[in-house]
Image (cartoon, rainbow, N blue to C red; front, side):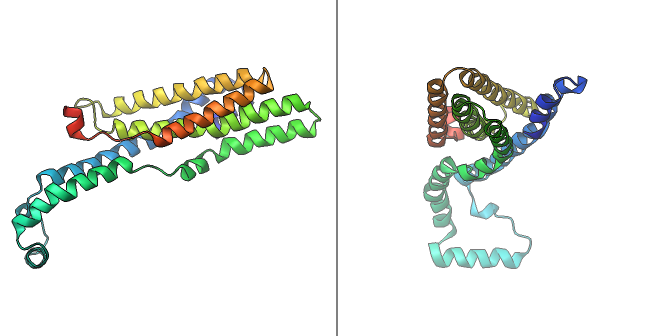
Length: 235
């Protein structure tokens, strides 16, 4: 976010044209790491489908014996425990995986940078005795509508896509897939930023309507399911 703002502040400098692409690098890295983490979690849950107690790996034989005794005490036998993991635990973990999300309040922290700078601009306009119409348009359309809500919606979309498309589409497509998802999320954000600029230059009503729409997108992304199991993908 800071690099994007620098590209605007130093728009006349030759390097300004490359700064937005530089700003995308850490975003792509975070998106890729998030996808890889989702893959690890999904694979761990998927292994429960074909779980075998006999294939349990232990560093020492004493650990295996302890696990065997505990399973026999609580479940009766290793076969009963295996059935419990496959039939009961696996579906439960799949449902929990679908509900697993990054809390919205954490994402709000991520937008604090651009939001603070936008607030600084608004305060500057206020101190400069700008018209109330301009202050309202900037507050609703840019500060709240774009820098807070639309940026938050863009981050929510990135998390949704990272989980939904965590598994590679085909062998060797991991990095390319991250770039494609990142490009889509970036385009989504740029579209909203352009709309915010247009409505902020128009009327207060349009700016407020845009802020309401952006809030609706935040609520929508917060409710959408963000995980697809392997069985669903196979069907």
